[in-house]
Image (cartoon, rainbow, N blue to C red; front, side):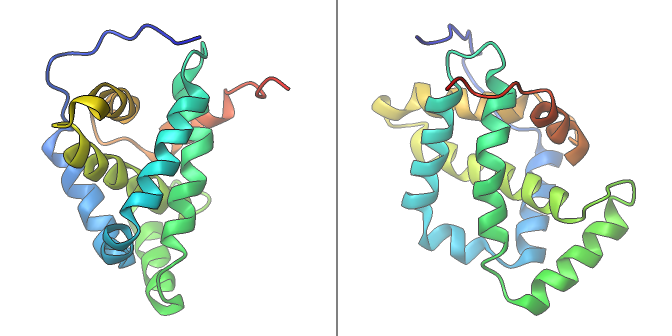
Length: 160
């Protein structure tokens, strides 16, 4: 069962969103990790989309399953860089209870943007990656991690 999603011809993240995602990934220091493990990471993101597609709450399911992927990526940095990035995150998003949430959220946005850039020109992958990008494009303005977390909180338990 697949959800019918109508996507615009061109999907893109606003420049300010992409810029902040890049800044977070640079602050955490995982751009090289993402580049080196791109095939595995993108495959996991595709699996998250497959799990969530067809659901009435596809965005919520997608975030619930893909944020742990991004969280695993941010924890591949050095302890010192992660400590500095968490401190920076606390200063940048003081309303967040857990400074790791913004780091994971923005890292996920970066990962999806990079995956979309890689696959949007490949016919067999374009529709899939357009759907994946659409999950975060819905957060068109600077999404707060709380916005993404809200999607996760409202997600019902997956069927057994």
